[in-house]
Image (cartoon, rainbow, N blue to C red; front, side, top):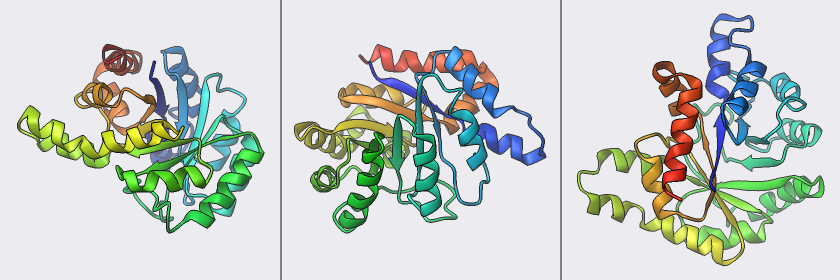
Amino acid sequence: MTKLSVNINKFATLRNARGGNLPDILKVAQDCERFGADGITVHPRPDERHIRYQDVLDLKPLVTTEFNIEGYPSKDFIDLVLSVKPEQVTLVPDPPHAITSNTGWDTIANQSFLQEVIGTFKAAGIRVSIFLNAEPDKVEAAKTAGADRIELYTGPYAEEFNNARTQQQNFQLLNDYKNTARAATAIGLDINAGHDLNLDNLRFFKLHIPQLKEVSIGHALVCDALYLGLENTIQLYKRQLKVAE
């Protein structure tokens, strides 16, 4: 079954807007797990505009499901991950002040850098996933760099799904994703996915990428929770994945 990891960054954004500790990020993570989340994802950025490095340290002893830390592998990020030792680290090629992730790695151009970073994390016993566009030609280099998984960047899929008018168009836009997933599976890489997945497009994506091990969802899930409640929203997302099994 595909796992749902809840990205709690947006809860931290809300907390930081007023200072103090409301909402309490530690309680949010525990509640997400209690409501059925299979994992907790955080993406600390250098300016700490949402999740702070201290939050990550505080979360480690409390998260009882899979803890996934994603981010650009700067020295500070690498040191943080090595001190926390989560189950998974997801490497993204974000520049320091990016609003949100908007592309995957060029695994060929960055091969030496990725090999060094991934080797450091794997030596510490941490599973490594790297953010990848739907580009089959970048898969082999992800494997040679040492990655255990790829995380498909689904922003373009979500945008095209929203704009598509016919089922045929929806099938067309998935071709690159399906080919990338097949290429990864063929050489032993597992597949995660994330970015702009929501209750409208998640089931369709899972139906056509059955190899999917895990999705990481934050922004849309938090927005839905404003209307539907957090527990109900988590269950609705899990239901989309289960229906597509």
